[in-house]
Length: 174
Image 1 (cartoon, rainbow, N blue to C red):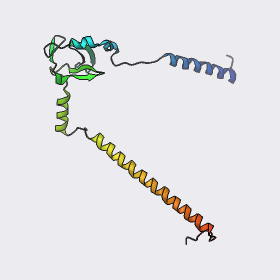
Image 2: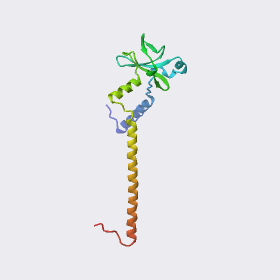
Image 3: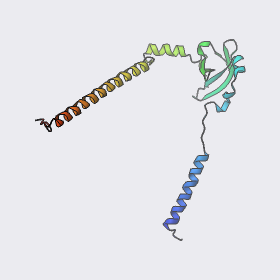
Image 4: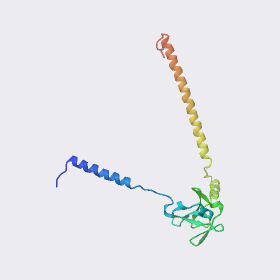
């Protein structure tokens, strides 16, 4: 077994590193939310024919997406009817979408969810506005304080220059 010099080992490591970097550049992982069912091709024609995107949640918590037509306020998925009122329709990229759990005949309704959050007092509707208002007030106070400190510092410097120029030297602070 021949021993390699340090220089040869370094060259091998550099070459291996270059190969690894090239492999990483080639592997570009792209995740699209709707790749498996090609929702991208959900066009205006299908919207006019009352098709919606359905996010179907199975009992095992696996999610599948499909395009399904609405017929007389009902969806037929796997030979089971589900409600599809205008209250249940959400928008995703300006396309109609319904979130539908398989164990319930009624889809997710944003209005009912919001009412439930109000009843449980877990709603955060106005908190964002309040937080932004508080941040603006804190920033305003900081700006005022900085301005006062700059003016005070300038007055102190001008006062010291005036005293030194009069010939009094540095004043004794004690």
